[in-house]
Image (cartoon, rainbow, N blue to C red; front, side, top):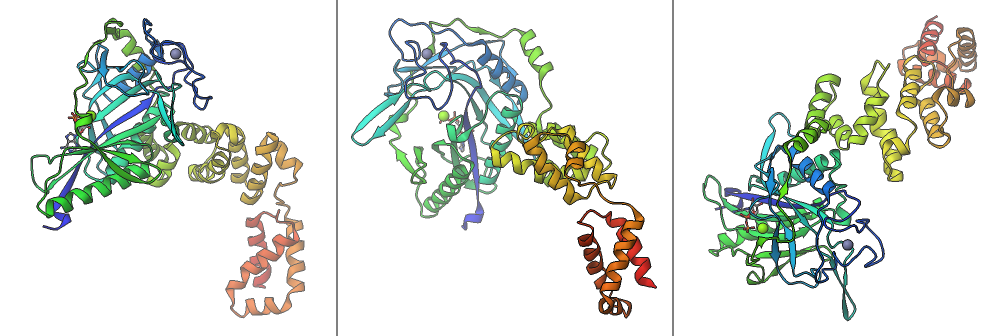
Length: 477
Ligand code: ADP
Ligand code: MG
Ligand code: ZN
């Protein structure tokens, strides 16, 4: 049977840092990039006799994550100890949730052309992150800055069927987390990483095949590569009459390949038991309700609204809603404008360019959205050209002056004075008798040349509509 006769089955386990200022069970900062072991205390270093105190804000962000993914929120959940030994885990257990996670049974609908795809979630639970081992030259060191940083783990059902779908799911989940402010989703900082479970089966089969798990992927590209690689490997193995072994692979981001870990070492013998140092976590219904009420518009709803209300294309909608900031900026540009497409284009090209170049949010990198709106209204009113608007925009990024002041200061206002334009047209016609003759004998294409000459003569500021009208008249005679 050919590889086309197979189907991939994929389930993802995403670990995402919650955007709190302090850690899950102590007051240490969660700030990324500090010197090793700067953000530590006896609690997150697992000293004997210390006691965890739960971070309320982390719970609220976990509830937000649950509500935003249509999960059922447990009003009473339990923390458990997951026991294992590793140098980056000084307590020898991780505080997590096992039988009673905070969220259950949610789903995420993936964007698609026409029909959307629903991916069901098994569970969402709260846990603390471990530290980080650093292997340097001949020594191994441990940095505990990350130890105790709050996480939620979001586990999907094996509903995904291709590497592309898996990446689409991760993009959507990450967008939701960023929209609701639960996580910054910074993959390069390890704030959003995932374990990928992959199996294959013959198309039409109802049973799942044996899966392997690839741990610790922190980029969309790695996820895609790892899945494609693993699906290919499993199909080849089965085609050769072999069997897939249930095992765990580690992704090596430096070498861009997977390494098998011994499966025995990571068998589930974590000896989970309820954490005796923490009482059950009670989330009052009122808290869930207030989270629900404060929920911002989520990406899927925003996308549907942009299509319905603005008639934008799928691509435009995808770009404008990828980040909440971008959509907010775009909508703040709109008031008073007739042409939504112009605003959409402007945000997608000019605004996102300066935002990407500076690594800042649109509202910080670009002039205030209201001023960009004012600038585009000047274009619509034919007071300035689109090119002049670009010049003004660049100046406004630096000066932060208003559109009106900038256009005045830079002398960008378009000339609509018909006498001045007529004079310029007449001059060009006198200076170019050969071209005029050619045009009059039928070379219509030369019209653009005359427009260009008039524009040049008027420093690019002439109103092109009036230039066209006058030239047409004068050249016809
Ligand atoms: P484990 O006990 O090995 O952690 P779970 O049943 O908890 O396995 O599932 C872990 C993840 O693996 C989930 O995201 C789930 O969707 C996925 N998964 C389970 N079975 C399969 C399978 N046969 N193929 C691919 N993914 C699977
Ligand atoms: Mg697992
Ligand atoms: Zn601490």
